Amino acid sequence: MPFLVLSDGTVVEGRTLGAVGETTGEVVFNTGMTGYQEILTDPSYAGQIVLLTYPLVGNYGINEDDFESDRLQPAGFIVREACERPSNWRSTKTLHRLLEERGMVAIQGVDTRAITKRIRTGGVTMGMITHGDPHDAVRRLREAPAYDETDFVYQVTTRAPYAWGFAGKERLDESTDGYKHRLVVLDCGLKHNILRRFAALGVRSIVVPATTPADEILAWNPDGILLSPGPGDPSRLGPVIETVRALLGRLPVFGICLGNQLLCHAIGGETFKLKFGHRGSNHPVKDLLDGTVTITSQNHGYAVDPDSLEGTGAEVTQLNLNDGTVEGIQVPGLRAGSIQYHPEAAPGPWDSRKYFARFVEQMGRRS
Image 1 (cartoon, helix red, strand yellow):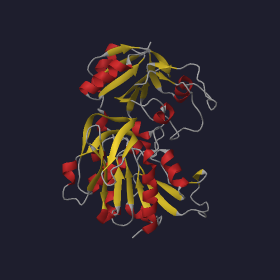
Image 2 (cartoon, rainbow, N blue to C red):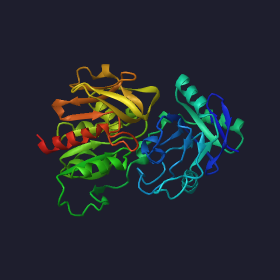
Image 3 (tube, rainbow, N blue to C red):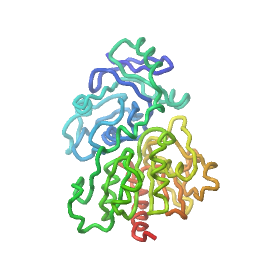
C-alpha cells in the first residue's frame, strides 16, 4: 500500500495509482474541476506533487489532443478517487494507465480535503509518496533538498530550437509563407496551447532554450519576444534575467506567469513566495486600464512585490481580486508588458485570450 508523507510527520495511507515506487516534491493543490491531463503535462509543475481538490478525477479519460508538453511534468499526483471507467468519445485510456505507462508514482483514496486545509493553514510543504516504510520516509524527507533549492527551468526547457505554426510543430527550415509575424519564445517551461493561440493569429513561433543569449535571439529577426511560464523561484534565474534585460527596448516583449516575474526582475523589481500559491481555473482578475474583470486560469507559487516596482518605469495594470496581488504590468518606455496568469487556459476559461491579440497588434507596429 502507498503512503503520503509530509515533512511535518503526517502519514496518510492510500491506494495505488500509477506506478509503484517513490517520489518526492513540494505538495501543492489545484482547485480546477477539469483539466487533469493538461495539469499533468504542464512544465510549471516540475518538482511538485499536485493534489486535485475535486474528488473524482479521470471521468473523461485521457485523449491524444490535450497534452501540453511531450511528457508528464509533476513529481507526483494525489486524488481522492480515480475513475476506472471513463466516458468520453475521445478517451483512449484511463488516468491510471497513463500514469503507469509514464512511470509516475501517484496515490488515491486519501482525504484530499484535509490535506488541502493543512496546506492552506501551514503553507506548501515537502512531501513523499512511497510504497516503502513511511516512518523511514519521514526521516529521509526531512533530509531532502527543499523545492526552492532546484532550478527546474533548466530541466524542462527545450534542448534545441524548433518552430511552431499552423499545423503544430515544424522544422525550422519550413516555409514561412502565410504568416504575419515571427515570434521568438524563450522556453522556461512552455505549454503547447500558447503556441497554438499565436498560430491561430497568424504567428509562427521559434522556440529557443532558456539558456539562449540575447544576440542569438535577435539573430532570428523576430517581430516580438515571449517570456514563457515555468517552474520554480524566478530570483534564482540570474542568467535568464540578464538575457531579458538585454532584450528590453529592442523589440516588443510579452511575459506570461514566470515570464511576468522575469520581466519584473529585469527592470529591478522583486518577487516573494506565496503561502500556498494560485492554482486553479476560477481566479478573478481586474484590468485597471479598462475596468474589466476576467476569470483566469492560474498556476504559480510566487508573486511580484508591487513596492519594488517604484521607480522602475513599470505600471501595475492588473490585480487579483482575491488577495490583491499583482497580475499584470506594463513598461511603456520599453514596449514590454506581462500578465501573471495563463491567457491560453488549457485548462480554464477563455476570457483573457484578448491579450494575445493585443500583443500581436503591438508586434505589427514594432516601433
